[in-house]
Amino acid sequence: MAESKPKPKIKKEAVPIPKQKPEERRRNFNEVALGYTEEQALEEANRCLQCPKPQCISGCPVEIEIPAFIKLLREGKYEEAIAKIKEKNSLPAICGRVCPQEEQCQMKCVVGKVGEPVSIGRLERFLADWERKRGFKIPEIAKPTGKRVAVIGAGPAGLTVAADLAKLGHKVVIFEALHLPGGVLVYGIPEFRLPKSIVQAEVDYIQRLGVELKLGFLVGRTYTIPELLKERGFDAVFIGTGAGLPAFMNVPGEDLGGIYSANEFLIRVNLMKSYAFPCYDTPIRIGKHVVVIGGGNVAMDSARSALRLGAEEVCIVYRRSREELPARKEEIENAEEEGIICKFLAAPLRFIGDEKGWVKQMECICMELGPPDDSGRRRPVPVKGSEFVMDTDTVIVAIGRTPNPIIQRTTEGLQVTKWGTIVADENGKTSLEGVYAGGDIVTGEATVISAMGAGKKAARAIHEYLMKK
Ligand code: FAD
Ligand code: SF4
Ligand code: SF4
Image (cartoon, rainbow, N blue to C red):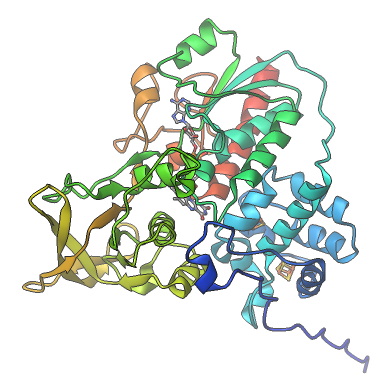
């Protein structure tokens, strides 16, 4: 009988990523995770089995050839490894940091069946950081096609469409309402999770592909979409305007002083840099007892920012249980290590103010989990007679975001859903000829990589449309 080959021994535990210590990082805005060293990256890359039929690829919305880049990394061919990633993903340093890998590529990794999956995101980050320190290599760009595309919004969806179309030889102009590009990557996700210099570096790379960026330009006011197409000479438009309008609970007292929407709070902290006050002229009032309502990434980011701004105690109030928390697992662990308290199965009923109109207390009710709702998660149901009162002087509401309606209102014939999202097919085609859309504006709030995946598909469809036109 032929001797069977010995199976390679794989370490069950992933190589941990070095981090700032919790007691230090809870008072600064420097990046928490410090990234793998070369030695650590090689050790982790060696845990990959180089599967002949790799499942991990199907978990990545932009279909990075994961085993191929890991093989190149293992061979020390870092330049080739990052080039392999960039065939599919123009923002690897960002995705390596904020992708919910545990639910995407890493969830499908076979090593995950016997231990911790291969840390694909951390390896991607290692390579992207390696390249950034040495200077980006610009890929080959196709000959100019003479076609012009307007991209509305410089978030992950818009940046991806722009990069892909520029590489195909089209002239792309991004119109962005804010004074900085990046969308949620700059105004939402805090510096300690995603340094803004890294977003800027990846945007610089996209500009070097030939993409033009017009900042402080609100489409729907300065120009409308019909004007861009008919008067400004664009052949196609991509809408990637995200879901930037905060949702509220509509409970009594929500308009008291000291209650912020997470959007307003995070924009002030990140985009206006209030954490660096007085070097930046944007102070923000933060009390001693901060309550954050919600359980997603936005709630975690708000809570951890409030702690770093000097709050004595920060409590997250979430209406479901720990198992349903939608935030990234790694960030929940980071938040708890830093001292964030979570109060599960509770929801606010009203806010109580002092004589000057500032919030001083919040009345809540306990919840229990009933049968699953439309989202498949168990529905929280109030428990009769379980009301209780919590003291608080600052509340941050992080219960969701909806699309800004300005484009929808100024573009006749553009089909929208009852939630205000734009109707588009799987390639981003909308009800109007030459107009495509993708990212949160189509799906409602989702993830960076799903917005980029939508951008990639739309870029392919726009290219096809332009070449036939
Ligand atoms: P956006 O990122 O919202 O970008 C849209 C851009 O369009 C903005 O720059 C906006 O200013 C611009 N714009 C809007 N209207 C106009 C107009 N009329 N004219 C011109 N410009 C316009 N996802 C993850 O995967 N991992 C995370 O860890 C994570 N954390 C998050 C934390 C926070 C605080 C938030 C708010 C979201 C988080 N997300 C996370 C979700 C993720 O950031 C979004 O799903 C993603 O950014 C959506 O990309 P987008 O390009 O569709 O829109
Ligand atoms: Fe995984 Fe995100 Fe990288 Fe894709 S882009 S391989 S999902 S970390
Ligand atoms: Fe490597 Fe896991 Fe992908 Fe297999 S599934 S190739 S082990 S990363």
